[in-house]
Image 1: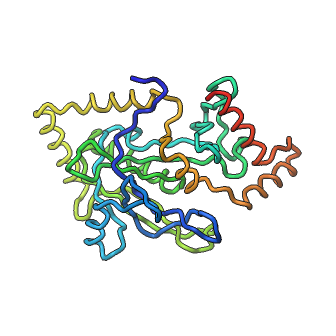
Image 2: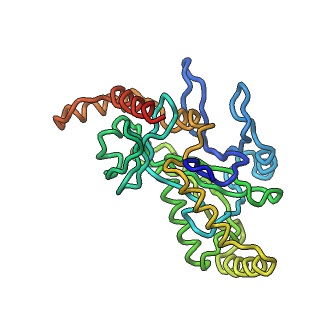
Length: 303
């Protein structure tokens, strides 16, 4: 296997609750109140919708807020990947990836390990450049049982809720996540920070009409049947683990710029707050632009 290349589950399309729109001559991220399932093909108007989008939408009165899914893996951390990630907004490449304790960072000396204090306390993370970045891989099609659709998010609400649900469902089913009948559900809530307007996040629930007891019983039966037919779930999970750890930086370079554009936009308020924070704390004075220039030099040096 080629070293330095992260092997992730095969992706057939994307699931999103937002998009990039043109406004005042700029391309800006915009949130939505429903799911959209897209293919991996773009045209001048953006991502082309996947045929599954129309099929599922026809049964949901127009607003797609629930998507039936199946998970590939029993291990929650193989289905949901999440770290703090700092992207270079010019190249689209990840520069620093951490878990709140330690991080891997590109420097002019190569990739180095450093402590990860989380974005609130990291000088490189000022200006909103570093965020929690989550990727959930789910299967939607019986035609390709190992193919996935990816849901990307930098939202704490979605990442926290998905992580909790995956952990709980794995526990109560005896680690049979891949055999449970699940669905992605879009939920809304209001907060003081949202000025009482709804914000939307993604939850993972049992499919409508299915109770936990029968879901767990069904999962046990499906797992036993698959084993009888020679299906090796443990080997599949080990292969996935080896693929993930084959590189320090788990990023899809083909869509790097789209990820940065949608989830890591430069905002004037972020840059202003960053400068004010440095002035109030009396710390060294590197604003967001100078930090990114330094990071780009580091990336170039190791390329």
